[in-house]
Image (cartoon, rainbow, N blue to C red; front, side, top):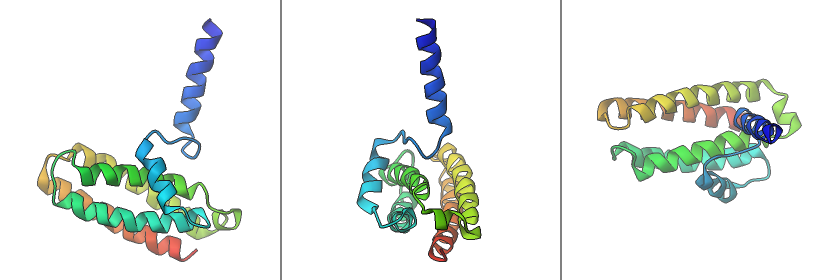
Length: 143
């Protein structure tokens, strides 16, 4: 019994650590399917368009709103889409830059989530997230 528990804990840790193998947000799977392109980069570009619309909606709302929740799930889908890049795409400096931007966006989003009820900070973090989203679009398009 003890080994079964240890195995379960180990499996859970592996799933949490591996960003490409598992998504914890069911809506993210749906957004990923809706945006599916020939490559993970194509899917990511489609998701960015979806995210831009959600971001604009989230700016007009407050708290844990539909726009912010949708943006959150779309961001999880976007992060997963980068794991589906081709080997040729992964081996480029642009992909490295995309991974760095994605990590910055994760930090911004976590701070945004903590300020979701403070309108000034919420909007400033949405703007910052939007700037990084624009930069990510340009980076993916260059691939």
